[in-house]
Amino acid sequence: MPLYVLGANDVVGVQVYNENSVPGTYAIGPDGRISLPLIHDFTVIGLTIPQLQQLITQKLSAFMIDPVVNVQLLRNNSKKYTIIGGVGKPGPYPLLQETTVLDALANDGGFHEFANQKDIIIRRGTKEFHFNYKDVIKGKNVKQQNITLQDGDIIVVKE
Image 1 (cartoon, helix red, strand yellow):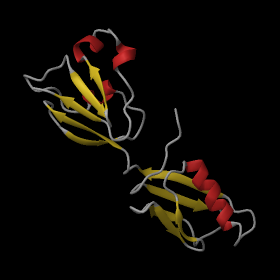
Image 2 (cartoon, one colour):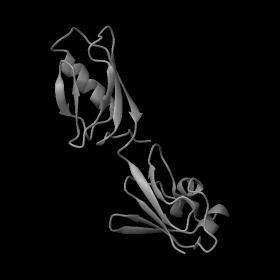
Image 3 (cartoon, one colour):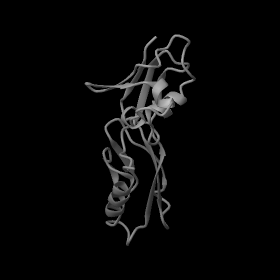
Image 4 (spheres, helix red, strand yellow):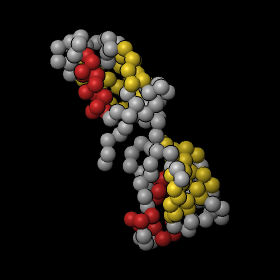
C-alpha cells in the first residue's frame, strides 16, 4: 500500500525525545504549511509521514544534537470520496485507508428501493468507471469493477 501523502487540514502529532518545547498536535493549514516552535513555519503538503519526520529532524539539528523525532498522522481531513444518489447516507466520506467501491457502498446505509444497482458510476476527473453491484456480490468481474477509490472520486447511484 502506498504511503499516505499529507494534505491541507490534516493533523499530525510530533514528539521529540527529551524536548518539551516542540511536541504537540499541529494542523496543516490551507496553504500546506505547519508551524513548530524553534523551526517556525514550513511547507509539508505532499510529503509522507517519514519524509516529514526526516525534515523536522533535519531542521531541529540546527538547535539540538541528534534529535529523535516521531511524527504520526492523527486526523486525515484532506482526502475524501463522495457518494450521491439513491443511498441511505449520501455525502462526503473520509478516505482513511485503502477503500474499494464495494467498501464504500457498504458504509453508506444501503440502497434506496429504486436505486440502479447494476450501473453505478465512479467519476474520477474526466474518467468514468462502471460498477455492477449485483455482479460483484456474486463474484463476477470483481477485479475489473471493484476499483480502489482515490481522493476526489464521486460515486453516483442513479435512481
